[in-house]
Length: 180
Image (cartoon, rainbow, N blue to C red):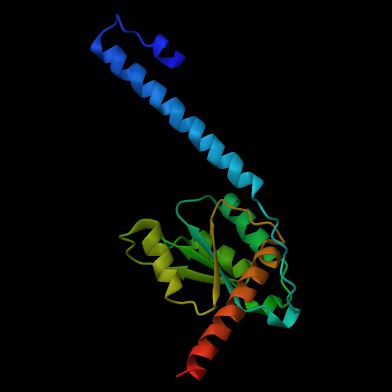
């Protein structure tokens, strides 16, 4: 218990209390480090599921905007339009504009993507996103802020995991229906 020798026993009550709190935080931090190291040792590499190109579902991509400049928004929209996907017709890109800005509308038209606006956005970003979600129907949705530039293989690396989950859920639902 050498740690108690470092406490300022001759100091004020304030110093002693914060000295004890410092020791407790060090103990908790050490415990957390051991948990982290243990969990890292149990890590298993997840292999990407093999999925046929025809199995890829429709995906909606929302780019939510709020006072971003044209240059920033252009980079994000351009990257989203160049995302790799087996059937590009299944990727639906939306700019969700919470301020009805004309240059955002023109940018959407320039890239031939859908433009969604909201008249009275009371709830900031969540109101903007909820408004956009009401107008979408794809089983998967990717949400990007206006200043996020997605990697071109983003969908190709993430969607296969969802497809395998869809198949598992469908099998469970099918077996439940058959057991009724």
